[in-house]
Length: 398
Image 1 (cartoon, one colour):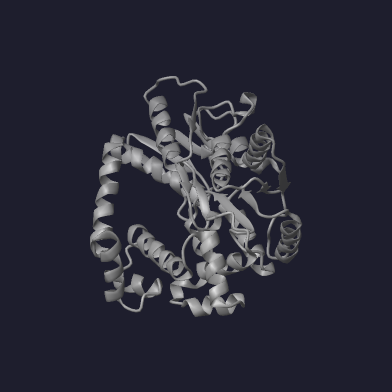
Image 2 (cartoon, rainbow, N blue to C red):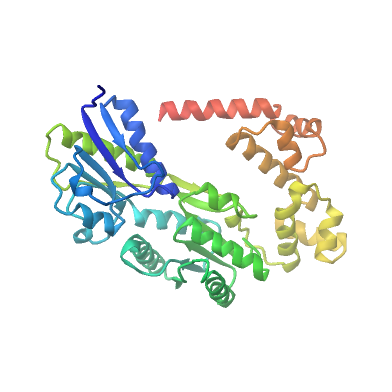
């Protein structure tokens, strides 16, 4: 009969990218350390707390941002590690070994990213306050401190919880808030899900992203990214490292070593910069319109004439304005947008080059090959392989 040395339960609602990546980090520790653990996780990846005190296992790693989980585990005599958000006030941490994402550093990374883009107006889109969103309150406090230190004001809007019956009302109020903001402005969303609301609201009322409003989220969630026409910039949390450190901390306890109330603070991985913050401090309204059209349609193979038709002025007029603001021609901008997307797809996906050529607006695979040869001295396949190997080498060296 199979019997592992230790039976471990993971209490997470793994319907969010944050939880899934924490669990992935736990799994990596299991593989790399060769611990003999039997890990229990609900088949549908949801957390159920009924009879948790009667559970006969050896250790627990749990989401301590969820107050229901915290209360259910209060007083447990099992080795336990909490995972959740950081707190500015040390007294707010739970009285257990704890691995935290650094909320202040997350917001600081987003804020510094917007500042580097040349923005000097800032806003923050949060969530309504409640006990399960204390991490959001920490992030609000972080942006207040950061902007105040630099002498900036920051508009903060908590918005409304979104459910099917309240969705339209919530989006209408969000739209009202967005329209009231001075522009151009950079908005930090407390999560990628909230950032997606901003992108939808801007599209609905014709506010151009990123030229009028630059948007950055937190989580780097694929779902939020792929459901938006404008690709979303986002701060990547160190969730994988959090899971790894949580498993390591639990392993220490299972070896009968007292860790007390040890806390481990995990910094963000970095910022994934995409279209939603590609702010160039454009001032000419015709160039802003042209850039908006190009970002949305370059990969459809549009020509310069279609851009000028959209903007509604002569080609010579727009070309002159475009060169003044952007430093190059409209044709070059169309070319750059397609090439940037093709490069990104080659590195971030396993889509074959023929399909990438089609999705990026090239008339043929041969045409895309000629572009890559001219720019990089490589075919698309060689470009993918060379940079993939470089990434692996860097990871090994790190």
